[in-house]
Length: 396
Ligand SMILES: Cc1cc2nc3c(=O)[nH]c(=O)nc-3n(C[C@H](O)[C@H](O)[C@H](O)COP(=O)(O)OP(=O)(O)OC[C@H]3O[C@@H](n4cnc5c(N)ncnc54)[C@H](O)[C@@H]3O)c2cc1C
Image (tube, rainbow, N blue to C red; front, side):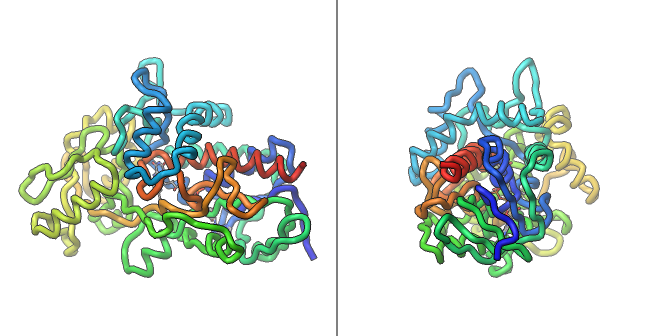
């Protein structure tokens, strides 16, 4: 017996789930949103670096799409990529309408270049961009008639005659359509491998498995991404992802001899691989507790850039007794992101009718190697699409 019934049920309260819920509600649907822990607990809120959109005068959605496809080694779904980059600027304006204030300079947005990017395209809110985006989305969701179910993990999803029945914690929820926005699985995989991860503890992947058991298709599922710059020392920074914007603002990777051994702003997989190989060649360094590492020379970042775009990173390291503007940091790749996931179409519908997926749980937009700054963008672009389409189908 269901205790609640809705047009749309969204699973997950990260940027993609919140964007889907707000968008479905605005399209006139009754919406429930269930999350495993508190509504605040997600990877999206941890995102520091920023979100990509082609606002530069020398830039375009087409150029952005080229960079995505090239960084993915031509494994991304070009149709999804063109939607991602084509709707990027309108997604930014939507976020602004919801209350996000991006860092500005000289009358425009402050833009940085990301690894794999040919143009400066990364918008930031200091270095707490994900926190700003999820706060604005959550406040909009909580200020609307969306019904939220925190601490209600999805454990079972069953197709019914008119839609779906979900068991979420102590609740049974029926809905005409369902949007899966439960993120990736890197926290669980890192634990299984005995490695560090940047992810929050809810990133365990069981919702993908529920969808797969129902018959949904996945793609590039084995492609997990290492963030090139995991913090390796001090101990309380192990598993922290040093924002890629450090490199956008001048930091470079150095080996034990102080030599630059790779293009510090190359695609993520290339940079991570270069670090691992440098250590294997015996040209790495060791942290005080014996972990492998190379140096990230953050002393090359100007104080002005750091104060505007890296204040959180500075605070965290300085609290641990290290000033990144005076001392090079120890860094080594750390498990970070699930590149592949559930197959979706342009409306974020999975291969199962009435079941949608957006954000890290979905595959295709990044192929086998994501560029930084495109995940928050994907959450907003495809979250909005999923919410709108799920509402439309439920109300049809
Ligand atoms: C440290 C860090 C820094 C990052 N920096 C950037 C950046 O600068 N730019 C960028 O674009 N991307 C960045 N990323 C990646 C990006 O933040 C995430 O990939 C993206 O935000 C994922 O959003 P999501 O909504 O798909 O999932 P999440 O934000 O992880 O949210 C998943 C939600 O699903 C819930 N959930 C999980 N299982 C269940 C279940 N069984 N039942 C119900 N709910 C469930 C979780 O509790 C959570 O609410 C970063 C990631 C990390 C970890």
